[in-house]
Length: 106
Length: 198
Image (cartoon, rainbow over all chains, first blue to last red; front, side, top):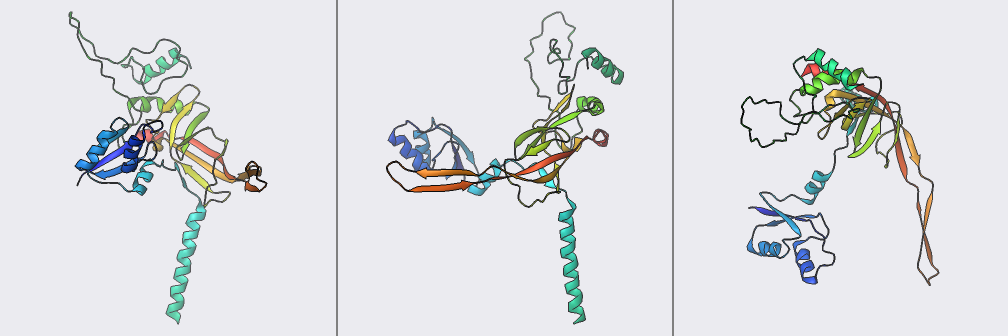
C-alpha cells in the first residue's frame, strides 16, 4: 500500500474558493503542512487540481502526526552530566535493597 | 598568522602539499583564493575539456571515518592558539560563546537545579583567532569537550496585558512573568588526541 506524501509549498491566500476547497479536502490548512493519503484515482485528481501549490512524493508508509513532529524537532544538543542524577539512582537502588532485606528478616 | 607563516608550517608537516586545504583556512586571507579544484596536471598539448566537478569537502565525512587530512594537520595548530570560541546549538539555536561566558536561554529548562553540569555536544563552528573548523553540518563531537553549569533562573519584569474592546467598559488583565535558565560555559577544550585515536 503506497501513499502520497503531500506538502503544501505555496500559500492559498488570494486563491479562488474552489482551489481552497480542494486543499481543505486534502487536509492542508497551512503552508508547510505534511499530509499522507493512499494512492488512488480520487486523490490523484485532487492533487492535479492543486499541482502548482504542492510537493508530492510516493512513499511506502504513512507517518503519524507525532512522527512528523519528531522528525522536524532539532536534537537538544546537551545532556545532563551531573552527579546528582547518578546519586538519585543509587539511592533508589539502596532503598530497594533495604526493602528486600526487611522482607527476608520478616 | 600570516599566509607565509602558515605555508611554512604546512611545508614542515607535509613537504609535498603545495595547495592550501579547503576546509580549514586562515581567516586573514585577503589575497586571491587558492587555485580552485584540480590538483591534476595534464602534459598534453591539446586542451582538455573537463567538466568541473565541485566536490564538497566536509570536515567530517562520517561518524566512523577518520578525520580528513586538513583536520589532522591543522587541529593541533588550532588547539595551540591561546583563545577559542564555539557556536553551540542548543535545540537548534546558535550561541557563539567562549569559556566563561554566560548564556540566558529563552526558556526554563525543566529538571535542572543550580550547579548541574550540562555536557554540550552540538556545535556548528569551532574556531580561534586565525583558524575556523566548520562543521558540515556539525563539528565532530569527539574533537572538543564543552561543559556548562546551570547558574540559576532569571525572570523578566512583570508584564501586564489589558484586553479591552471599544465601547465596552469591561477589562481583562493578563499577567506574564517568564522564567529563563542561565548557563555559564565552564569548560571549552579541544581534544587533539581524538585525531590520533581514529
